[in-house]
Length: 125
View 1: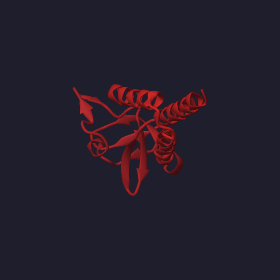
View 2: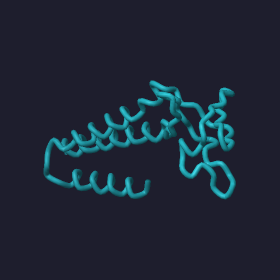
View 3: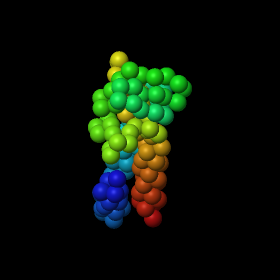
View 4: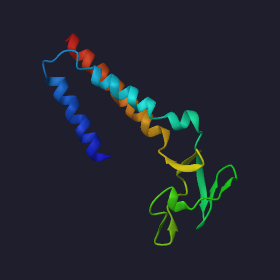
């Protein structure tokens, strides 16, 4: 995550201090991409994992999925401790998929939108 933040910050300052006009579309595209990446939250309604065994995944609504945790996340166990609890998964197409928390995409969209606003303020100065 740190590398991404550094790259985005470098891109922002490169665009901010350049004389190029109309470069703000990059930030609009970034915000749009971040919103579009939230599609699992709109379509599949992911649930938090509360317990994991060698062959089942138990979700917060009490559903027990007969799926080995290794099919969702590798490694599913680290030093004997399951790594899936407290993560979100979506059930789709007969499979179980790990989903990032929606706040990561909301934060990215807000970041891009804020950078776009800063670029527009700079252009007016």
